[in-house]
Image (cartoon, rainbow, N blue to C red):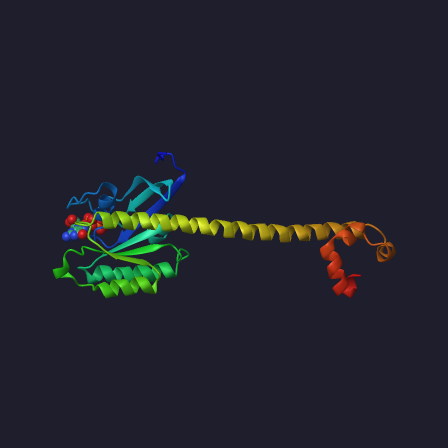
Length: 236
Ligand SMILES: Nc1nc2c(ncn2[C@@H]2O[C@H](COP(=O)(O)OP(=O)(O)OP(=O)(O)O)[C@@H](O)[C@H]2O)c(=O)[nH]1
Ligand SMILES: [Mg+2]
């Protein structure tokens, strides 16, 4: 059966961050339409949509190509994952990746999935950032790491984004039951307290003497309370 990709309730937003000129727009365009244009408007900050089927589900992918027009906090607040780009030709852009790391770890979004991307890998002769440096920065922070080229790599960029989407969806799925079971546990504790409060108010409405001799039938019927009474003489 064919999936209608546009008929989807699932939405993921990936935000491209990095210094000027590292190739954020080139990567976005390569993913969105498989092309490389050479020139991209440096002031254009734009969010593009692409519909994909991921793990059998129709997903709307929003690729947010930034140009430094908003604060980092705002970019992080609205992201499901970050694609942080530096150029392997530029030490400065790699230093910016480290300072991004310092900011994100001290922010409330320190658990946001991040992919570190060393772009322009086909220009090996001009390399100023080693593969090892990129790999180490990513590993230290539990990020994924790719060296690639928006100029020549189509499949690599495609696979990278789709794998990330699949991973984010898996994380969402595995976090959901945990959240639900925490909620259920909290509700059951709350219910126990409510019942106890009801029982106490019920028993205090009679005389103290009466209570000492004649326990509330509700209390004596509750198996857990009966057990507790056995181990706590003050209650019996
Ligand atoms: N050789 C090569 N050039 C690239 C690659 N990716 C981008 N470029 C070039 O680098 C320049 C900057 O690319 P952009 O995609 O505009 O960079 P950006 O990060 O979006 O820059 P801002 O929008 O100014 O922040 C352009 O001339 C691109 O053609 C790549 O993989 N290889
Ligand atoms: Mg750009």
